[in-house]
Image (spheres, helix red, strand yellow):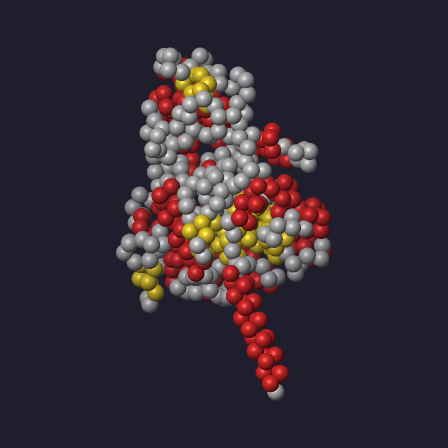
Length: 495
C-alpha cells in the first residue's frame, strides 16, 4: 500500500510538473512577412524569434529560405497560400496535391520543419475584394485537405483560412448580436462545418488600430487594453476594450449557428509605429504590452475565458509591402527591418525584448541634399519622385515620424532611402546636382525620425543561398515599385 501510495504521488507530481512546464513553454506567436528590399537573413530571424520566446510563426507564403531556416528550430509553423492561387487550387485537386508535396511534405521530411497548419488564402472574403475569392476559397480548402490526407499528413497538419473581422457583424452594435454577413453566410457555414469535421480551427484577424484610424469619432481609449473609455454594457457583460468586444461578436456568431465550441486562432493583431498620426511608438508599445500581458496571463474574453492562440502582427517591418491600405502597412513590426528593438516590451518572468545579433550593414554614409544646392521646385519634385518611386518614403506621410522635416529634410530623407535601397552603389546619390554623400548621421536629434542604413546583403550571402529566392525578391520589388509610385504622387500633391 505504501509503495502504491508513493507511486501515485510521484505520478501526480509529474502530471502537475508537466502541466506547469507546458504552460510555461506556451510562448508567443508571430507573423513573419518577407516583403523587404533588404531582408534580415532567415537564420538570424529565426534566432531572434527563439531568443524572444516566439514558438509559433505564420508565413504568408511558402518562402523557401524562411522554411529552411525554421527546420529543426522547435518553432511550429503555419504556412500560407496566397489568394492568387485559390482559383487554381479550387479547380484542380492535382494542383493542390503538387502544392502540398512541394511546400509541406518536402519541408517536413527533408528539413525537419514543424508545420502544423496550412492557411488557405488570406482574408479572402474581405469586402474590398468584391467577392473575387468567395467561390474559390471553400473548394481550395477541400482540395488542400484532400492533398494532406493523400500525403499522410491529415492528422499532423490542419487546414484553416485566415479571415478578416468584417465577415461578421452585429445589427444591435453589441457583441451578443453577432452573426455572419448575409452575403457570405452560406459559405461561412460550409467552411466552418468542414473545418470542424476535419479538426481544423478558424483563424481571424482583429485590428483595433484600424478601427481607430478609420473613424475619427472612435473612442481612442477603447482601442487599448488599459483604456479609460466608457465601457460597453451588453446584458450581464461589460466590455472595456474593442478587442474583447470584437472577438465576442465572433463567438456570438459561432454560437448562433451551432458552432459554439469551434476552436479559434487570432491570426493577426498588432499596432504599427509609423505612416499615420495614430501609428507611433507610444501607441504601439501601449497596445502590444497590453496584448503580451494577456498572453502571459492566459486571459481570454468574457464569453470565452479560455484564450486563443494569438499571432502578433508583425515580427519585423516590411519596406516593400503594398501600401494600398495605407502608409502604415510597412511599419507593423515589433522589430525594425534589421531586427533592432523599436521599443521595450516586458515579456513576463523578468524577460525583456532582445535585438538581433550578427547583422552586418552597409558603410555609415548617407545621401542628403547639398547645402549648396538651390531649392528649385521643379528639379526637387522630379528628384523626389525618382527616389520615392523606388524606395520607401512612407515615414514622410502626414502625421508620421518624419513629417515635421522642412523641404531640405524631406529631400534628404527621400534621397537617402533611395541611396540605401540601391545598396549605396556608385551613382545612386545623383539627383540633378542636388545631393551629396555625408558621413555625418542626418537624423534629427531627439526625434523618432531616423535616416536608415540598410543591411549589407552581400556580406550575408552564402553559397547556400538559393537562386530560387531571387525571383521572389524581384516580385517583392515590383510590388514596392507600384505602391511607391502611387505614394509618390500622393506625397508630391501634399508638398
